[in-house]
Amino acid sequence: MPDDFERMWADLGPVGRSATSGGYFRQPWTSAEVELRSWFVAQCVARGLRVEADGLGNVVGWWEHPGASGPAVLTGSHLDSVLDGGAYDGPLGVVSALAAVDALRDRGFVPARPIGVSVFAEEEGSRFGLACLGSRLVAGALPWSTARELRDRDGVFLGDALAAEGLDGTPLSLASVGTFVELHVEQGRDLVDRGAAVGVASEIWPHGRYRFDFTGAANHAGTTRMEDRADPMLTYAMTALAANKQARLAGQRATFGRIDVAPNGTNAIPSRVTAWLDARCSTDDGLASLVEAISAQASDRASRDGTALTVTAESVSSSVAFSPGLAASIAADHEGGDWPVIPTQAGHDAGTLSAAGIPTAMLFVRNPTGISHSPAEHASMPDCLVGVSALADTLERLAGS
Ligand code: HGY
Ligand code: MN
Ligand code: MN
Ligand code: MN
Image 1 (tube, rainbow, N blue to C red):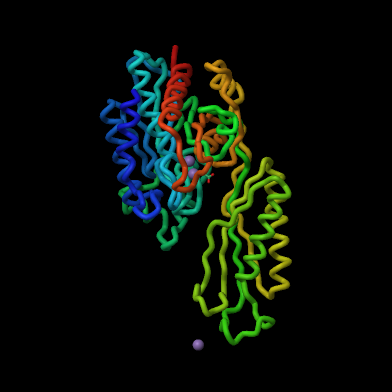
Image 2 (cartoon, rainbow, N blue to C red):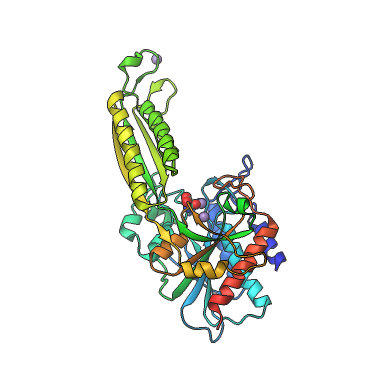
Protein backbone atom coordinates (compact mmCIF):
# COMPACT_ATOMS: atom_id res chain seq x y z
CA MET A 1 0.00 0.00 0.00
CA PRO A 2 2.74 2.57 0.79
CA ASP A 3 4.12 1.86 -2.68
CA ASP A 4 0.83 2.75 -4.33
CA PHE A 5 0.67 6.07 -2.55
CA GLU A 6 4.29 6.98 -3.27
CA ARG A 7 4.01 5.98 -6.91
CA MET A 8 0.91 8.12 -7.41
CA TRP A 9 2.49 11.00 -5.54
CA ALA A 10 5.56 10.80 -7.77
CA ASP A 11 3.32 10.86 -10.89
CA LEU A 12 1.85 14.21 -9.88
CA GLY A 13 5.10 15.90 -8.82
CA PRO A 14 6.09 17.51 -12.13
CA VAL A 15 2.61 18.52 -13.37
CA GLY A 16 2.19 22.31 -13.39
CA ARG A 17 5.31 22.88 -11.28
CA SER A 18 7.17 26.17 -11.64
CA ALA A 19 10.90 25.71 -12.23
CA THR A 20 11.60 29.00 -10.48
CA SER A 21 9.52 28.82 -7.28
CA GLY A 22 8.87 25.08 -7.03
CA GLY A 23 5.18 25.95 -6.55
CA TYR A 24 2.23 24.77 -8.62
CA PHE A 25 0.10 26.52 -11.24
CA ARG A 26 -2.84 24.19 -11.79
CA GLN A 27 -5.65 26.55 -12.70
CA PRO A 28 -8.84 24.82 -13.79
CA TRP A 29 -9.38 24.01 -17.45
CA THR A 30 -5.74 24.74 -18.26
CA SER A 31 -3.30 22.12 -19.54
CA ALA A 32 -1.87 21.19 -16.10
CA GLU A 33 -5.29 20.64 -14.56
CA VAL A 34 -6.59 18.79 -17.61
CA GLU A 35 -3.54 16.51 -17.43
CA LEU A 36 -4.21 15.81 -13.75
CA ARG A 37 -7.84 14.99 -14.45
CA SER A 38 -6.84 12.56 -17.24
CA TRP A 39 -4.37 10.99 -14.83
CA PHE A 40 -7.17 10.59 -12.30
CA VAL A 41 -9.48 8.96 -14.84
CA ALA A 42 -6.68 6.54 -15.81
CA GLN A 43 -6.15 5.66 -12.12
CA CYS A 44 -9.87 4.94 -11.74
CA VAL A 45 -9.93 2.80 -14.89
CA ALA A 46 -6.86 0.87 -13.72
CA ARG A 47 -8.76 0.02 -10.50
CA GLY A 48 -11.90 -1.02 -12.35
CA LEU A 49 -13.88 1.94 -10.99
CA ARG A 50 -16.79 3.20 -13.10
CA VAL A 51 -15.95 6.73 -14.21
CA GLU A 52 -18.67 9.38 -14.08
CA ALA A 53 -17.44 12.68 -15.51
CA ASP A 54 -19.78 15.66 -15.79
CA GLY A 55 -19.92 18.75 -17.99
CA LEU A 56 -17.88 20.82 -15.52
CA GLY A 57 -14.76 18.77 -14.91
CA ASN A 58 -16.05 17.06 -11.77
CA VAL A 59 -15.22 13.33 -11.85
CA VAL A 60 -16.20 10.39 -9.64
CA GLY A 61 -14.72 6.89 -9.82
CA TRP A 62 -17.29 4.46 -8.42
CA TRP A 63 -16.42 1.22 -6.66
CA GLU A 64 -19.73 -0.62 -6.98
CA HIS A 65 -18.99 -4.00 -5.52
CA PRO A 66 -21.57 -6.62 -6.58
CA GLY A 67 -24.31 -6.52 -3.97
CA ALA A 68 -23.36 -3.05 -2.69
CA SER A 69 -26.45 -0.87 -2.36
CA GLY A 70 -27.94 2.03 -0.43
CA PRO A 71 -26.53 5.52 0.13
CA ALA A 72 -23.01 5.85 -1.25
CA VAL A 73 -19.93 6.99 0.64
CA LEU A 74 -18.01 9.61 -1.32
CA THR A 75 -14.44 10.67 -0.62
CA GLY A 76 -12.04 12.93 -2.45
CA SER A 77 -10.92 16.51 -2.90
CA HIS A 78 -9.62 18.71 -5.75
CA LEU A 79 -6.66 18.81 -8.13
CA ASP A 80 -6.56 22.54 -8.97
CA SER A 81 -4.23 24.87 -7.09
CA VAL A 82 -3.95 28.53 -6.16
CA LEU A 83 -1.35 30.51 -8.12
CA ASP A 84 2.05 29.24 -7.00
CA GLY A 85 0.45 26.82 -4.56
CA GLY A 86 1.74 23.82 -2.66
CA ALA A 87 1.69 20.19 -3.75
CA TYR A 88 -0.70 18.93 -1.08
CA ASP A 89 -3.73 21.23 -0.97
CA GLY A 90 -6.28 19.12 -2.86
CA PRO A 91 -4.17 16.35 -4.45
CA LEU A 92 -3.39 14.81 -1.05
CA GLY A 93 -7.10 14.08 -0.57
CA VAL A 94 -7.46 12.60 -4.06
CA VAL A 95 -4.36 10.39 -3.92
CA SER A 96 -5.22 9.31 -0.35
CA ALA A 97 -8.74 8.35 -1.47
CA LEU A 98 -7.37 6.13 -4.26
CA ALA A 99 -4.79 4.66 -1.86
CA ALA A 100 -7.54 4.03 0.72
CA VAL A 101 -9.50 2.02 -1.89
CA ASP A 102 -6.32 -0.02 -2.52
CA ALA A 103 -5.86 -0.50 1.23
CA LEU A 104 -9.46 -1.68 1.67
CA ARG A 105 -9.04 -4.18 -1.15
CA ASP A 106 -5.77 -5.40 0.40
CA ARG A 107 -7.69 -5.92 3.63
CA GLY A 108 -10.26 -8.01 1.72
CA PHE A 109 -12.99 -5.53 2.66
CA VAL A 110 -16.33 -6.11 0.93
CA PRO A 111 -18.28 -2.83 0.78
CA ALA A 112 -21.98 -3.06 1.53
CA ARG A 113 -22.48 0.41 0.02
CA PRO A 114 -20.97 1.99 -3.10
CA ILE A 115 -17.80 4.01 -2.52
CA GLY A 116 -16.96 6.94 -4.81
CA VAL A 117 -13.64 8.74 -5.23
CA SER A 118 -14.27 12.32 -6.32
CA VAL A 119 -12.46 15.27 -7.84
CA PHE A 120 -14.25 18.63 -7.77
CA ALA A 121 -13.37 21.37 -10.26
CA GLU A 122 -12.10 24.92 -9.44
CA GLU A 123 -12.07 24.51 -5.66
CA GLU A 124 -9.71 27.44 -5.20
CA GLY A 125 -11.53 29.96 -7.36
CA SER A 126 -8.09 30.92 -8.64
CA ARG A 127 -9.30 31.37 -12.20
CA PHE A 128 -12.96 32.48 -12.05
CA GLY A 129 -12.87 34.03 -8.57
CA LEU A 130 -15.49 31.81 -6.95
CA ALA A 131 -14.17 29.05 -4.68
CA CYS A 132 -15.74 25.56 -4.72
CA LEU A 133 -17.28 26.29 -8.11
CA GLY A 134 -17.62 22.63 -9.17
CA SER A 135 -19.14 21.48 -5.89
CA ARG A 136 -21.44 24.52 -5.68
CA LEU A 137 -22.90 23.70 -9.08
CA VAL A 138 -23.29 20.03 -8.20
CA ALA A 139 -24.92 20.92 -4.87
CA GLY A 140 -27.37 23.31 -6.57
CA ALA A 141 -25.90 26.22 -4.57
CA LEU A 142 -25.18 28.24 -7.73
CA PRO A 143 -27.23 28.47 -10.93
CA TRP A 144 -25.43 27.68 -14.17
CA SER A 145 -26.89 30.86 -15.70
CA THR A 146 -24.82 32.88 -13.17
CA ALA A 147 -21.74 30.67 -13.27
CA ARG A 148 -21.32 30.69 -17.02
CA GLU A 149 -21.05 34.51 -17.04
CA LEU A 150 -18.07 34.52 -14.66
CA ARG A 151 -14.89 35.77 -16.35
CA ASP A 152 -11.24 34.97 -15.75
CA ARG A 153 -8.47 37.60 -15.73
CA ASP A 154 -8.26 37.47 -19.53
CA GLY A 155 -11.97 38.14 -19.86
CA VAL A 156 -12.79 34.55 -20.90
CA PHE A 157 -16.29 33.47 -19.82
CA LEU A 158 -16.54 30.26 -17.82
CA GLY A 159 -19.05 28.92 -20.32
CA ASP A 160 -16.56 29.45 -23.16
CA ALA A 161 -13.61 28.00 -21.20
CA LEU A 162 -15.64 24.85 -20.60
CA ALA A 163 -16.87 24.66 -24.19
CA ALA A 164 -13.24 24.78 -25.34
CA GLU A 165 -12.72 21.58 -23.32
CA GLY A 166 -15.87 20.01 -24.75
CA LEU A 167 -17.79 20.54 -21.48
CA ASP A 168 -21.38 21.83 -21.44
CA GLY A 169 -21.79 22.81 -17.77
CA THR A 170 -24.14 19.96 -16.81
CA PRO A 171 -23.36 18.89 -13.22
CA LEU A 172 -23.34 15.30 -12.03
CA SER A 173 -25.92 14.26 -9.46
CA LEU A 174 -25.11 13.57 -5.82
CA ALA A 175 -28.56 12.10 -5.18
CA SER A 176 -27.08 8.69 -4.33
CA VAL A 177 -24.52 10.10 -1.85
CA GLY A 178 -25.19 9.47 1.83
CA THR A 179 -21.90 10.69 3.32
CA PHE A 180 -18.87 12.66 2.15
CA VAL A 181 -15.41 12.48 3.70
CA GLU A 182 -12.60 14.78 2.54
CA LEU A 183 -9.00 14.28 3.63
CA HIS A 184 -6.89 17.45 3.38
CA VAL A 185 -3.47 18.69 4.35
CA GLU A 186 -3.73 20.90 7.42
CA GLN A 187 -3.29 24.54 6.48
CA GLY A 188 -2.17 25.85 9.85
CA ARG A 189 -0.19 24.81 12.92
CA ASP A 190 -2.78 23.21 15.22
CA LEU A 191 -1.73 19.59 14.68
CA VAL A 192 1.97 20.46 15.06
CA ASP A 193 1.17 22.20 18.35
CA ARG A 194 -0.85 19.20 19.51
CA GLY A 195 1.70 16.60 18.36
CA ALA A 196 -0.87 14.68 16.30
CA ALA A 197 -0.37 13.26 12.79
CA VAL A 198 -4.09 13.41 12.02
CA GLY A 199 -7.02 15.54 13.16
CA VAL A 200 -10.73 15.79 12.43
CA ALA A 201 -12.60 18.98 11.48
CA SER A 202 -15.34 20.33 13.70
CA GLU A 203 -16.36 23.36 11.62
CA ILE A 204 -15.39 25.81 8.88
CA TRP A 205 -15.30 29.48 9.72
CA PRO A 206 -17.57 31.78 7.73
CA HIS A 207 -15.57 33.55 5.02
CA GLY A 208 -16.03 35.73 2.00
CA ARG A 209 -14.45 37.61 -0.89
CA TYR A 210 -15.22 41.30 -1.38
CA ARG A 211 -14.16 43.53 -4.27
CA PHE A 212 -13.11 47.07 -3.36
CA ASP A 213 -13.09 49.44 -6.36
CA PHE A 214 -11.21 52.64 -5.53
CA THR A 215 -11.36 55.35 -8.20
CA GLY A 216 -9.42 58.59 -8.38
CA ALA A 217 -7.85 60.81 -11.03
CA ALA A 218 -4.89 59.80 -13.17
CA ASN A 219 -2.23 62.48 -13.22
CA HIS A 220 1.50 63.08 -13.61
CA ALA A 221 3.62 61.61 -10.79
CA GLY A 222 6.10 64.49 -10.97
CA THR A 223 4.16 67.66 -11.64
CA THR A 224 1.05 67.02 -9.54
CA ARG A 225 1.45 68.63 -6.13
CA MET A 226 0.88 66.23 -3.25
CA GLU A 227 -2.11 68.27 -2.08
CA ASP A 228 -3.72 68.22 -5.54
CA ARG A 229 -4.03 64.44 -5.87
CA ALA A 230 -6.95 62.03 -5.83
CA ASP A 231 -4.85 58.91 -5.48
CA PRO A 232 -6.80 55.64 -5.14
CA MET A 233 -3.58 53.74 -4.31
CA LEU A 234 -3.26 55.81 -1.15
CA THR A 235 -6.84 55.02 -0.14
CA TYR A 236 -6.21 51.34 -0.85
CA ALA A 237 -2.98 51.33 1.18
CA MET A 238 -4.69 52.90 4.20
CA THR A 239 -7.55 50.42 3.84
CA ALA A 240 -5.12 47.49 3.87
CA LEU A 241 -3.60 48.80 7.11
CA ALA A 242 -7.03 49.34 8.65
CA ALA A 243 -8.15 45.82 7.68
CA ASN A 244 -5.09 44.28 9.26
CA LYS A 245 -5.60 46.21 12.50
CA GLN A 246 -9.33 45.50 12.63
CA ALA A 247 -8.83 41.74 12.18
CA ARG A 248 -6.02 41.59 14.73
CA LEU A 249 -8.10 43.37 17.35
CA ALA A 250 -11.05 41.03 16.73
CA GLY A 251 -8.99 37.81 16.55
CA GLN A 252 -10.22 37.31 12.97
CA ARG A 253 -8.60 37.28 9.50
CA ALA A 254 -8.47 39.93 6.78
CA THR A 255 -6.21 39.82 3.73
CA PHE A 256 -5.79 41.81 0.56
CA GLY A 257 -3.93 39.30 -1.62
CA ARG A 258 -4.80 40.57 -5.07
CA ILE A 259 -4.94 44.02 -6.61
CA ASP A 260 -5.38 45.34 -10.11
CA VAL A 261 -4.12 48.84 -10.86
CA ALA A 262 -4.97 51.04 -13.84
CA PRO A 263 -3.10 52.20 -15.78
CA ASN A 264 -0.28 50.57 -13.75
CA GLY A 265 2.54 52.93 -14.71
CA THR A 266 5.38 53.97 -12.43
CA ASN A 267 5.15 57.68 -13.28
CA ALA A 268 1.37 58.05 -13.20
CA ILE A 269 -1.00 58.43 -10.27
CA PRO A 270 -3.47 55.57 -10.84
CA SER A 271 -7.03 56.21 -11.97
CA ARG A 272 -8.29 53.01 -10.36
CA VAL A 273 -7.25 50.34 -7.89
CA THR A 274 -9.34 47.22 -7.53
CA ALA A 275 -8.45 45.12 -4.50
CA TRP A 276 -9.99 41.89 -3.23
CA LEU A 277 -10.51 41.40 0.50
CA ASP A 278 -10.55 37.84 1.84
CA ALA A 279 -12.19 37.99 5.30
CA ARG A 280 -12.80 35.13 7.75
CA CYS A 281 -14.40 35.05 11.15
CA SER A 282 -15.62 32.54 13.72
CA THR A 283 -19.27 33.65 13.40
CA ASP A 284 -21.51 34.89 10.58
CA ASP A 285 -22.37 38.08 12.48
CA GLY A 286 -18.71 38.66 13.27
CA LEU A 287 -17.84 38.37 9.58
CA ALA A 288 -20.52 40.88 8.62
CA SER A 289 -19.28 43.31 11.32
CA LEU A 290 -15.65 42.90 10.30
CA VAL A 291 -16.37 43.70 6.65
CA GLU A 292 -18.65 46.57 7.64
CA ALA A 293 -15.94 48.09 9.85
CA ILE A 294 -13.28 47.77 7.13
CA SER A 295 -15.64 49.24 4.52
CA ALA A 296 -16.53 52.17 6.81
CA GLN A 297 -12.88 53.00 7.41
CA ALA A 298 -12.17 52.73 3.68
CA SER A 299 -15.06 55.10 2.84
CA ASP A 300 -13.93 57.57 5.45
CA ARG A 301 -10.42 57.50 4.03
CA ALA A 302 -11.78 57.86 0.46
CA SER A 303 -13.63 61.04 1.37
CA ARG A 304 -10.43 62.48 2.83
CA ASP A 305 -8.42 61.48 -0.27
CA GLY A 306 -10.96 62.77 -2.80
CA THR A 307 -11.42 59.27 -4.18
CA ALA A 308 -14.53 57.11 -4.56
CA LEU A 309 -15.16 53.59 -3.32
CA THR A 310 -17.63 50.82 -4.04
CA VAL A 311 -17.60 47.49 -2.20
CA THR A 312 -19.14 44.37 -3.75
CA ALA A 313 -19.53 41.05 -1.93
CA GLU A 314 -18.51 38.52 -4.58
CA SER A 315 -19.11 35.44 -2.43
CA VAL A 316 -19.92 34.75 1.19
CA SER A 317 -19.87 31.26 2.72
CA SER A 318 -21.69 30.83 6.00
CA SER A 319 -20.49 28.88 8.98
CA VAL A 320 -20.39 25.09 8.46
CA ALA A 321 -20.67 22.71 11.41
CA PHE A 322 -19.69 19.18 10.42
CA SER A 323 -21.68 16.26 11.74
CA PRO A 324 -20.49 16.08 15.40
CA GLY A 325 -21.34 12.38 15.72
CA LEU A 326 -19.37 11.50 12.63
CA ALA A 327 -16.40 13.62 13.75
CA ALA A 328 -16.41 12.07 17.23
CA SER A 329 -16.58 8.52 15.88
CA ILE A 330 -13.68 9.14 13.47
CA ALA A 331 -11.60 10.82 16.19
CA ALA A 332 -12.20 8.22 18.91
CA ASP A 333 -9.98 5.48 20.22
CA HIS A 334 -6.72 5.54 18.37
CA GLU A 335 -3.41 4.38 19.63
CA GLY A 336 -2.23 7.13 21.96
CA GLY A 337 -5.74 8.54 22.49
CA ASP A 338 -8.35 10.41 20.47
CA TRP A 339 -7.39 12.58 17.53
CA PRO A 340 -7.92 16.29 17.98
CA VAL A 341 -11.18 17.73 16.66
CA ILE A 342 -10.35 21.21 15.39
CA PRO A 343 -12.00 24.08 13.53
CA THR A 344 -10.59 25.32 10.25
CA GLN A 345 -10.49 28.75 8.68
CA ALA A 346 -10.10 27.34 5.15
CA GLY A 347 -12.95 26.67 2.75
CA HIS A 348 -13.46 23.20 1.25
CA ASP A 349 -15.82 21.29 -1.04
CA ALA A 350 -16.75 19.41 2.14
CA GLY A 351 -18.26 22.69 3.37
CA THR A 352 -20.41 23.06 0.26
CA LEU A 353 -21.66 19.47 0.47
CA SER A 354 -22.33 19.78 4.19
CA ALA A 355 -24.29 23.00 3.59
CA ALA A 356 -26.31 21.05 1.00
CA GLY A 357 -27.40 18.63 3.74
CA ILE A 358 -25.00 15.72 3.14
CA PRO A 359 -23.50 14.40 6.41
CA THR A 360 -19.84 15.26 5.98
CA ALA A 361 -16.51 14.85 7.76
CA MET A 362 -12.96 16.01 7.17
CA LEU A 363 -9.63 14.50 8.14
CA PHE A 364 -6.53 16.70 8.32
CA VAL A 365 -2.95 15.51 7.94
CA ARG A 366 -0.28 17.42 9.89
CA ASN A 367 1.69 20.03 7.96
CA PRO A 368 5.08 20.54 9.65
CA THR A 369 5.60 23.97 8.11
CA GLY A 370 2.09 25.13 9.04
CA ILE A 371 2.24 26.96 5.68
CA SER A 372 -0.26 26.55 2.86
CA HIS A 373 -1.17 28.32 -0.40
CA SER A 374 2.60 28.49 -0.86
CA PRO A 375 5.33 26.20 -2.21
CA ALA A 376 6.42 25.68 1.43
CA GLU A 377 3.32 23.59 2.21
CA HIS A 378 4.34 20.09 3.30
CA ALA A 379 3.32 16.78 4.85
CA SER A 380 5.74 13.95 5.68
CA MET A 381 5.34 10.59 3.96
CA PRO A 382 4.77 8.74 7.29
CA ASP A 383 2.01 11.21 8.22
CA CYS A 384 0.44 10.86 4.76
CA LEU A 385 0.32 7.09 5.26
CA VAL A 386 -1.32 7.50 8.67
CA GLY A 387 -3.86 9.68 6.85
CA VAL A 388 -4.51 6.94 4.25
CA SER A 389 -5.13 4.32 6.97
CA ALA A 390 -7.36 6.72 8.86
CA LEU A 391 -9.38 7.34 5.71
CA ALA A 392 -9.55 3.61 4.93
CA ASP A 393 -10.77 2.90 8.50
CA THR A 394 -13.43 5.61 8.12
CA LEU A 395 -14.64 4.26 4.77
CA GLU A 396 -14.68 0.75 6.17
CA ARG A 397 -16.92 1.88 9.01
CA LEU A 398 -19.23 3.95 6.79
CA ALA A 399 -19.53 1.49 3.88
CA GLY A 400 -19.37 -1.73 5.88
CA SER A 401 -22.33 -3.96 6.59
O1 HGY B 1 -9.23 29.62 0.28
C1 HGY B 1 -9.56 28.62 0.88
O2 HGY B 1 -9.97 28.60 2.02
C2 HGY B 1 -9.41 27.30 0.24
O3 HGY B 1 -8.23 26.69 0.46
N1 HGY B 1 -10.17 27.00 -0.83
MN1 MN C 1 -6.61 25.89 -0.93
MN1 MN D 1 -8.01 22.55 -0.68
MN1 MN E 1 6.25 63.37 -19.36
